[in-house]
Length: 281
Image (cartoon, rainbow, N blue to C red; front, side):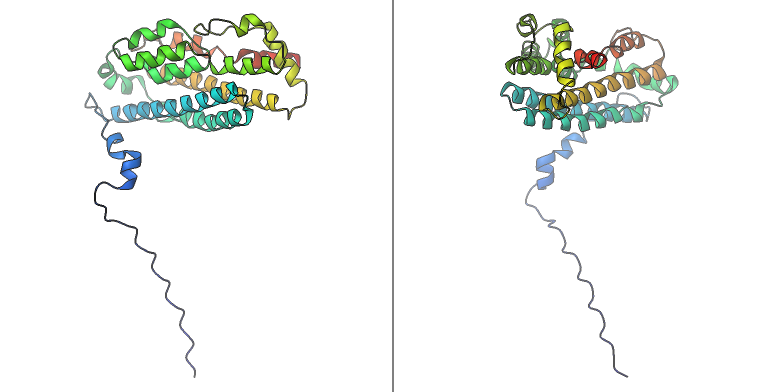
């Protein structure tokens, strides 16, 4: 009886390169050792670690979203709508990840939160400089929001610069005006360091755009902005629900009215005419 040929043994996968003269290229690029040693809890409660890490992760998402929106604003300034829309679409995925950050905190009971709340002192997410830059890019501006950062010169300077620069929506409206749409001069020449206020004339512009071809690049820009605005609204509502669950109607750690203040914020839409124009299409 002839012997059948035995199948060749599968070759072992090559061992990855393990020996480096210094730190690994991964560490050099990601700085993981820095990131994973930034957690310094202030209480003995084991739940504080997830609160701290989740908050730090949120700060990282704020940073990348600010980058995307600044990329979009710069592209709009140069009339490059495809680059702007691509950045906005990336930010939508990032906002989804940011909003998912509430999940580890969404089940906190008052007793669990109270076990380490005192460690926060007067600390509050309201004081986040990078989140404030996000808000400024959305047109939610107020010079008083610079006050908490007077003790950090670099951060204060960055925020002051952002306060006096056109918001993302300002750049959108300027682009629409350059394309011949009737954005009023009062909107185009407004003080951009102030909160954006809705304009009936801008609502008419969006009504006209949404009444036209749905595949028009300006209509697609409007939809990308609407996706962003919807997720910002969801962020605010998820924040409200998590806070209400963890602390009820008590005063916030930073001295705000807590839930009452968040409820007021959750009622506001960014890019307002993109929402109201839909009633007239």
